[in-house]
Image (cartoon, rainbow, N blue to C red; front, side, top):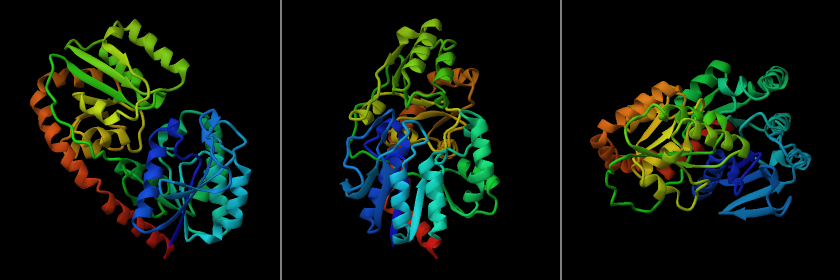
Length: 376
């Protein structure tokens, strides 16, 4: 079985957050499981380009990756050389798995693959949500979806990563086969111990800082919280938007209780472990990798209903659910003052639960079963 993973970006382009990690881990774990995997991607790294060899196979953590130059520096990621190479080689693969939508690598790559009559799986990774349609470039997206996107998607298999995303895609494409398999998450081998409750609540927001993540909701909510707390914000984003949020914290009178520590990767799990609760009040989140990362070291979560993993958190009693509103978030945080025993219980229980539910070998088998069914 020869599998091509097609993604507009790939590691080390960590600026794109969770999707970069999810796609790379999928490719790596498929290789470990014995599959033949190749990745076509671009040099995209935000407004800059990755300093990598172009158009030649490179082994990245065991995966054969070919990077192609892009000619646009925005989210369109147009790469004529990638599309030309795909046209020449698509027949070499049994299945082509395309990650994300609304970029020209994904949409035009899908067109090329279908013309070449190779089975295509699309993992939208949140790009086909209602939130995505009604926000940035919504008019362009609607036209593109009507004229090209939807006709292409109807001819593809769909992969979703949460029940919420599955429901959205089934409503949009009722005749398509939809496979629902969660992301691979990097579960650390480090063992943490020594957690002790403090005299204040230690909260952490750990994510890319962009509008859909709901950090504005959290900062607005905290002005009404009267229990003692400290908030750590671990992440980075557009400097103009980050400065707006810092001004919001200042205007709300909470700046002294907020610590902006920037993007973290090497000490990610230690930082998560040291906090009482990780908060992700997103307006839209098809999965939410950080939810599993946090729980893997025992830190409970407070997430909005719009986070794809909210039902998993609720069903398994691994944290608390809120609405995407400052009133709801404020009330949920205030309630945490009386939840010290529950926080301690989750600290003990969550790591084992996550290790079992997101076992690499079991997930790899599910993905390989999906590819096998699609090829047949």
